[in-house]
Length: 248
Image 1 (cartoon, one colour):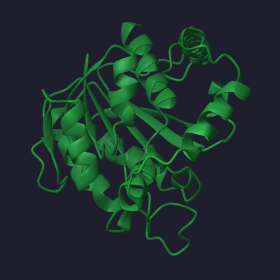
Image 2 (cartoon, rainbow, N blue to C red):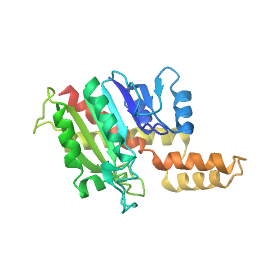
Image 3 (spheres, rainbow, N blue to C red):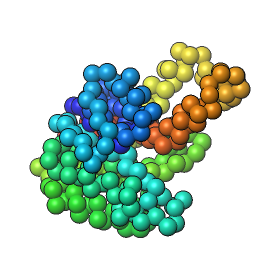
Image 4 (cartoon, rainbow, N blue to C red):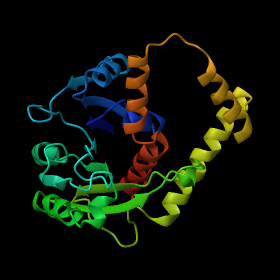
């Protein structure tokens, strides 16, 4: 399977796909800094900028970390999917309709559930022939200290079929994927000789205290990129769950 990442940012979904053994062949990202970064790490992929004019590509899995500015609880005056940023869902769904990937992953603020706008998204997917499942997923299962809950919606073509006995977010599949990730993280930590949370905290703190000479502008762009990105562990979980579901 291969992957096309829309609103790809710094490449959280790309990294998750790589860890899951899935190749990223396309990205679409408007921001200059993030776009150039994606071109560097994916020299053989097709890269586009503006979702409103993008031609897209054929791929098994589409992902979209949709802009959340109009949806987030931090913006009480946000217009939801009617806003200029979060409303970019509409040109994206047109590309989904045209290319008909086997699976589509949407990542956004849980406010889509609380405002019930997720019902509109589910309807749009149904119109173009997709079933969908969703969950609000935290980083906590991967032992991160913060929650950062995100809505994860995984849609798949109706021909694949919804099954009560084999849902995408089956609890056994979820546990299996999380356990496998933790085992791989343990192996990496053993190799790097930083085996405890205390060691990692001290290492990161010392690294941040070093004067690297990086400009404030560049550092600010990097921090913004990390803040916007989906957690790669959660991204990998999405791909691993899709692989299990597709095999069934």
